[in-house]
Length: 196
Image 1 (cartoon, rainbow, N blue to C red):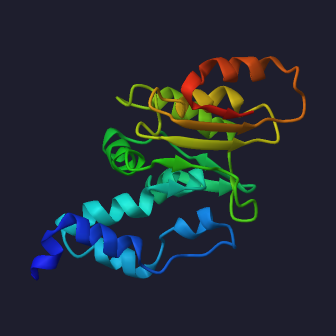
Image 2 (image 1 turned 180 degrees about the vertical axis):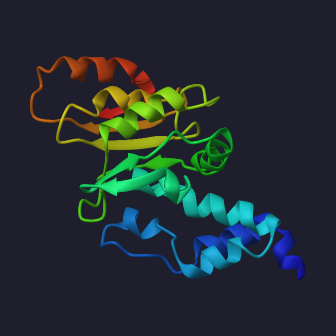
């Protein structure tokens, strides 16, 4: 193997300059590195895999991307929503967790035509079954932008609000007097609150 591949900084630089999937003219969408080249590079060696996977999973715009790391026989898309067919095993959670720990930015529903919903039953299962992650589904999350057109998913935000968050933005449904609004706001670390 060429010495270039042994220098993590060089590999990281190469990965950040791979072709990207462009979901629009907005710059933040250009960071989605889902190219076949990146995936092939991740499959080359364990040394490269860690660096490339960190890059591939750094920014997630759809929770379903992560949830689909569970085996296909454990979930289905039902009426446009992700739903579990059974509880994942400990081994399946380990695989899920290895990807969840890589996510730094989560902006669900930022690209409405690309995003499918997660069923309330799936959120319930996630909140009850999240093992050994200090009850945070994405433990290394630094930035989240949550958009919701209903209050039903708001109680499950606690799965994402870890103490390390630096940037939190919520777009709540129109009813500003709803009791979930103040409950959700009370969970947010003060330094991370940027917009409600």
